[in-house]
Length: 332
Ligand code: KDO
Image (cartoon, rainbow, N blue to C red; front, side, top):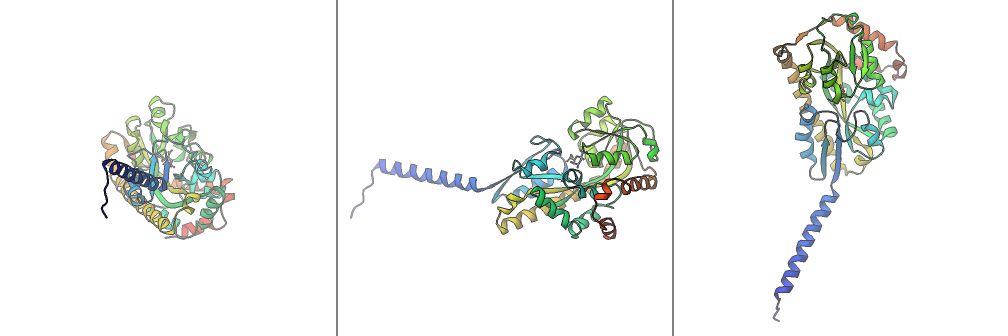
């Protein structure tokens, strides 16, 4: 039998095939899970770099990682609510934010509790936080994937009077992120805390609306706070941690293999960012001195004593799970 195919049939067949391919590709693309992350972190922050390099590509087979930096999608502090409402898939959350919804989280907002990056990582994976993590999933629909090291927070001032003890911070207008737990930390340090969004801090320092702010050295460099301040007091009052979070609903919609890939990618990205932050912390003192800032250690014992006493006597401590401070301290 002779099969004859005319030109029109060929064109129609090719067009049909093209449509099938296009539709097929579209269908595959549509099946990809969209993972939008919103954070006030800048695109050059080590956490952002770590996630873009190690998280996005590792999940690309089944998910589109779409980060929005500089709080360009959601305002700082509103991300958890956005996830809970199904409007956002991922965020970089702080214990301070979590404590506004689940008060027990305030334990991780206490100054001079976590000792360093290693301690922070061990505490996160030790099991002592399991109950808090579970409550966060159940009440908020937010799953904590991994812990992120932001660095040791230090006081950074535009004034040049030296600070040795908490008394020297009396009356100093110290910007803190806008939540009760953050403001309490500023007060515990001896300062007069003022709430302000991270994205507004540079201008507030420049204009003198605030006398100072507190952040880890890598953040001070990244946000260029050294351009508008004169000194960094190495108070190391908080080993700051953030958590890489994902919507529990989105997580539950992934296959077990995809969940394992997301978890591994999250851990690797956070580990890379942690190493980068630590390396920067080790070298930045010299950078700031070169820029003309005074960088020095105050009487850390005086700060530690005051801050710890303030926290233990605070209303926050009443919400802390019994025995958790001791368990955290016992992790070596
Ligand atoms: C800040 O607002 O000072 C802070 O350092 C608080 C952190 O918890 C974190 O949210 C961070 O900002 C942002 O990611 C910007 O780096």
